[in-house]
Structure formats: C-alpha cells, structure tokens
Amino acid sequence: MQKVSRSGAAGELRLDALIADLWWRVRLLNTDILEEETRAGVFDVQQPTYPLLALNLRARRDNLVSTIGVLEQRARSTSEAA
Image (tube, rainbow, N blue to C red):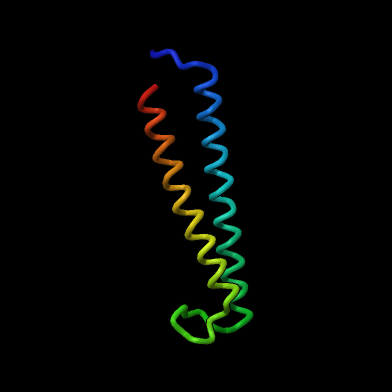
C-alpha cells in the first residue's frame, strides 16, 4: 500500500466534493431549462421562439459540464500519481 500524504488525500476529497457540487448544479440547470421550455411551450433550440433564458441556461450548463470534465481528468491524474 502506498503512502498518501494527508494534504493530498484532503485535496482529493475537496476536488471530489467540488465535482459532486457542480454535477448538482448541472441537474438544477437542467430542471430550470425544462421549466422555461415548458413555460414557453417551445422545446426545439432551432426554433426562433425558443426562450432566450433557456439558451443562456444551456450555455451555463455546457460550461459547467466542460469544467467538470477538466476537474475529473485532474482528479484521475492525481489519484494515478499517488
């Protein structure tokens, strides 16, 4: 069994907690997007009447998902190095 420093393990835990929190926020954004689409009655992003708020929420969600991908890669490389 390899030794893991306390700060390394704590850092991994914080990173895992951050990733979990960001996934929770993605789920919240998905709910908000669906609510806005339902309110407007438009579910196709290609429609000119698609709600602007839903478009903005989608962009935020996509940015979070991209950030999560980078953080997950960092977590993998950190755990492989340990």
